[in-house]
Image 1 (cartoon, helix red, strand yellow):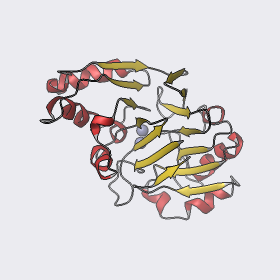
Image 2 (cartoon, protein in one colour):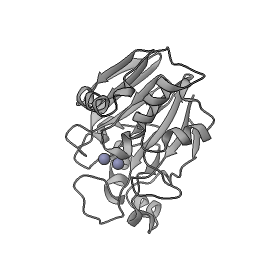
Image 3 (cartoon, rainbow, N blue to C red):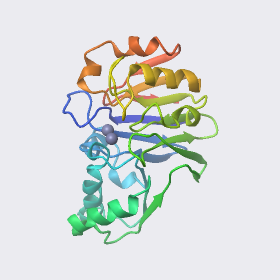
Image 4 (cartoon, rainbow, N blue to C red):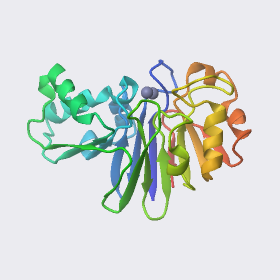
Length: 250
Ligand SMILES: [Zn+2]
Ligand SMILES: [Zn+2]
């Protein structure tokens, strides 16, 4: 079984229902945090999950709306008065993670791990496992290095797009998954080179033959329309628009 906690379903733009990016997937009892935008730790706390339960973070790219709370998390690991971290912590991310981490610690030297091992893994077009969970990554074209993640537990499968475009490899990566969690930054007809709109997000879901679709990362113009209806013109299965706090089981 996979359990999903939608911690942040929006962009950097302040929005009561849609905070910056963060998704917690618990598969085979193993929590994996995907992206860690500002406020993610607080919403993880609201979901009843402790930061000490986290061993794995996957980053799709390094934009602040997907990464800012990494600084907070590393601070918690070093300076939690009652729960000093000793277990290793692993960050898997797109190309550039070594440099990103080096510069983060240059800015905030107090974030360098004091009592635990920090592991950095760079992936792009890759496959690896954590326990029984199979993970696959592929580029999305939002930045030169941005990636999406596919997770499978042997029974179910999902893809988390991060920020994506129509000229990435989402269709192949999401081939017949049970759930595609897909960014849909803009409404139908909106021209964009570095994001998806209702037309391209719907077309990707349809071409990939996914069983269901959850839309995330909506900018205000996308929230001003019936986005689900626009996506349904291209994709004929189950679609819903995520809000912070959405909880699902696969
Ligand atoms: Zn973003
Ligand atoms: Zn981005």
